[in-house]
Image 1 (tube, rainbow, N blue to C red):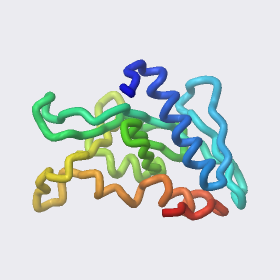
Image 2: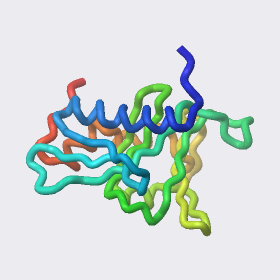
Image 3: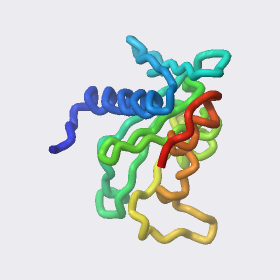
Length: 162
């Protein structure tokens, strides 16, 4: 089945995937009805307060370098996001990475004058890394996979089963 290209469907799909993965870990969440930079409010067993999440979603990897390079995925988010956490979703493979606001800012490779940040990495494992460790490839961010981050960020969350 082909993935949809409708931006509203892509965004909604990302939010629902994050909710589904959290629910599998015993973590409750609710979608916001308006777009104010916060997409989900999350409450986990053992937490003292709710946590806000902004969800950024891509439906598929695209060629880098103006369309001629290796396959990559990337998201743009505002430096001033009000959300405590950012969830970056790759719908083609149903994968979610969960970053704190500070982790996302520190990992983002680009920062525009308009106050946006760009976080991206290659999905193609054959990308050659430079001596300084760049560019990022997908395995470099495995520690941010939702199933690994959720038990750390949400007290009382169930450990993901392998």
